[in-house]
Length: 174
Image 1 (cartoon, one colour):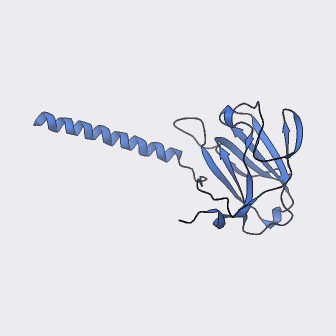
Image 2 (cartoon, one colour):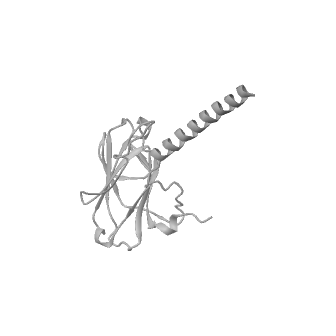
Image 3 (cartoon, one colour):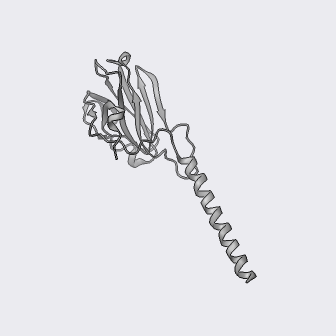
């Protein structure tokens, strides 16, 4: 009986330890910027003229999503466009980053950054997250730059679609 009781305590200790490690690991990987269930049905695809300096030289009129072939992990890829001349006060900029570090610049001033300050116990990626940035009417007509740095070669030089719209319209209703 004592051997069975001792074995049960031993198993319970290991299960508790495993659950504790999983909780601590999950806490380190949670990011405030992760809105993983955004619905783009009520958003407007941002149809500005996107430009980039690529390995092939300067390119304009890029169509998003776009993938610059031949880029390696850690290499920054920057695209730019002009924000619309009219912006509603509730408008926000949305795009999905896939295993990328992101900087968003408006008129060469950093408006937001994602992934650079985070530390991970496992892996080297900030994960996949929706970037959501409020846009004010004072920023109308200014230059918007998106810089992405892929954590892996597969995601280097990749930019997904960019959307404009109101945040409350993008969250799904259940």
